[in-house]
Image 1 (tube, rainbow over the protein chains, first blue to last red):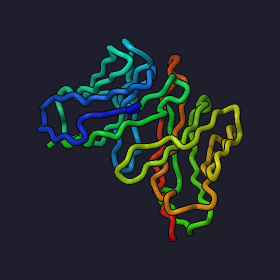
Image 2 (tube, rainbow over the protein chains, first blue to last red):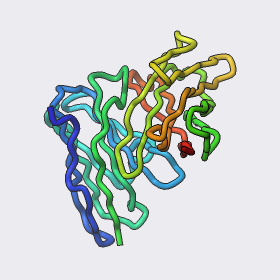
Image 3 (cartoon, rainbow over the protein chains, first blue to last red):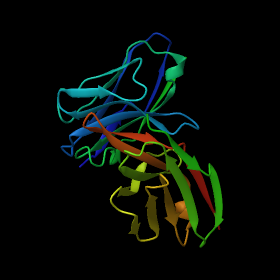
Image 4 (cartoon, helix red, strand yellow):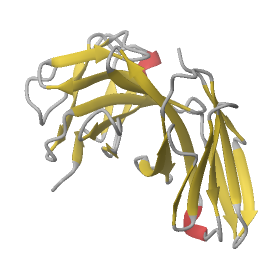
Amino acid sequence: NAGVTQTPKFQVLKTGQSMTLQCAQDMNHEYMSWYRQDPGMGLRLIHYSVGAGITDQGEVPNGYNVSRSTTEDFPLRLLSAAPSQTSVYFCASSLDGRRVAQFFGPGTRLTVL
Amino acid sequence: GENVEQHPSTLSVQEGDSAVIKCTYSDSASNYFPWYKQELGKRPQLIIDIRSNVGEKKDQRIAVTLNKTAKHFSLHITETQPEDSAVYFCAASKKDFGNEKLTFGTGTRLTIIP
């Protein structure tokens, strides 16, 4: 199993550009989530999904969209990038909601200029 | 919403000594408390977790204790080794409209001094 994978590893955007961060897992996990990690602030939940076709907002959802058309994939879309979205983004998955974030992906480091 | 506070923010201990990291949470409905270890430049890794119906859980050199009355939980690492150096995050979760959401503490940078 590859576990949780994320692409790209690094990305630089200009203010106003849009892009999609990819996340995939091959463990047939129902629960997937996106976090951003900023220095001194721990990890904050952006959006999460409890299964294909079901998504909901987390703590900091503004400026981000998600969809879950398959169990395996959970992409995160930045609609119009802003410097405040400069961060490291982690995707996580778990078999169900009991463990919430059991496995994390390797992360995407995003810089918005 | 839930608020998780974590202390200390940095901790240095001699190799072989014990390390203790403490977290408090605000929402008495929280019922799941995981701990993550994050090495520099790497992803967080779940190292141990505890549910509110258990007061203590141990896995080799690491243990977690939970005091529901005081709303705090702690990570204990015994016989520390250089590879224990990392940032440790606590988190708390409760069901919100049927779904679990995690709130993280701000992390503790643990340094093991050889």
